[in-house]
Each structure stands twice: as C-alpha cells, then as structure tokens.
Length: 175
Image (cartoon, rainbow, N blue to C red; front, side, top):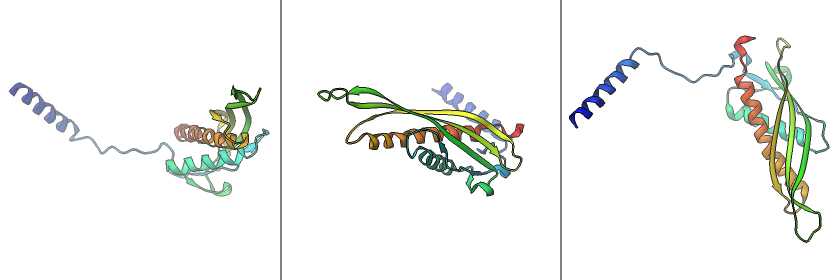
C-alpha cells in the first residue's frame, strides 16, 4: 500500500514538474483571420428534384454558423465563397406495400453536389469540383413528396457537415 502511494505521489510530482514550463494550450482554427468571412450563394440545381439547391444552401449556412469560425457575409463582402451545384438526385425503391401491387413504401434517396471554394480576394480556386454525396432511407407515410423533402433535409445536414469540415481543414498556410 505504501509503495502504491509512493508511486502515485511520484507520478503526480513528475506530471506537475513536466507541465511547469509548457505554455498554455489553446484550440485555434487553421483559417487565417483575414479569411474568416464566407458567402454561400444558393446552390444551383441541375436535377428535377425541386428545392434541393435552397435546402442544401440553408443547411450549409447553418453549419458554418454552428461551427463558429466564419462570419457569414454576402458574396461581395466575403473573403471566401462556397459555390455549389446539385448534380444528382435519385431515389430507389427498397420495399413495396403488400396488397398495392408495385407501389413502393420505402426508398433510398441519394443526392450529389459539386462544390468549389474560392478566395474572393485573389480569385484563386482553393477547392475545385469537390464531390459530396449524402443518402438516407425514407418511408412513404402519406405522400411521396413530403417523405422525400424530409429526407432531403437529413441529406443536406450530412452534406453541409462534409463541406464545412473540408473548408475548415483546408491547408490555408500553403497558399
């Protein structure tokens, strides 16, 4: 028991001594201060699925606000701009309702966007043609469009996190 207490005391002493000369640690972003404003114009939608562009744009803006590194600005007032295009939206039936023939009651929904990150001051494209795909399953309870719209919101939340993660982890110091 005394030996164990001695070991714990020694470990505490070494830990305290080892940290005595170390400067304070802080979590900081890799994004330089001059690049901490971002604009996210409404994503173009090249699919037949209505409202996908605005939905993904809204969730991307929310994700940048939630994360907190960037201030959201209009396109002309920002250092960075996230430009997005919805290039694919596809739903595939997974299961069918019994007694209703070939009517699907569950779908898998896939959405793909392409994103570019532009430094507005230099005009340099930092990320180009980056592809993000989100997918989810939804049940048809009521009408198909309501289920698909709800699924689009879940997909938009996933895609927006991927976009924000890439913008935050971009190696800005290598520009």
